[in-house]
Image (tube, rainbow, N blue to C red; front, side, top):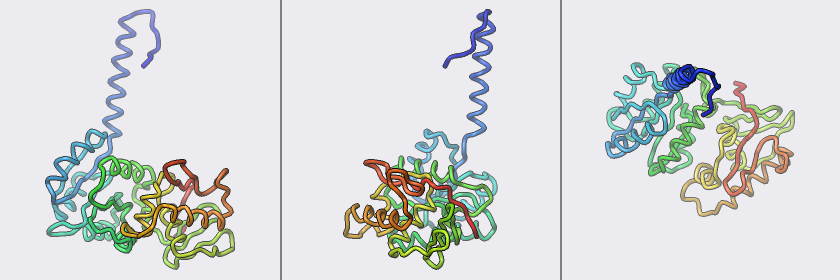
Length: 265
């Protein structure tokens, strides 16, 4: 790193040292706190150090009761929460937090791959959902994405009933979408795909992840199925893939919803 030049070497060294200390203090102040909750010690003993190396301050809870206590004493910026745990399971922990109007971002971990199970968890206020087993790098990517779109003290996009992006509106309860005053004629899978993209704005999402999330991990189809539904959405939205307003293609990787999404109810 280049520093401003001074005529006196001692002054330059002092300035450099002060700058380094200031940067260190700034990094300490901005380090996000993660509460990692899982009853499998084999997971937490490896995952906690990994998250710390990624730049997070991590504390571990081994069951739901402990997690609820630590939410109040540790005040995490984000909670990674296993679903299947003793005493109080992860879904019940999530329900209690949201019932108490605590909207700390939550990423649920589970071994259940059913899309209906994921949908229920998101409706209850989870910010994202990750199936076990998973790549720790994928978890870090999800944490960063959730932290970017988190609105402290507010419901996550995944828990909102109605979303909007400019003149595009999505009603998640009735499974209907409009652009300006015109209702869009979309297949159920296209609606589900639009919903997932709008609840994960500005996040690069692979075709494999969309296939897993929207169709289910055991769905007997390839990623071309995703491309077909993306094309359907683009036609309905009049979204030119070469100059997109809503859905951007990331070559060789997947898709990203680039419009600004807001909650309208």
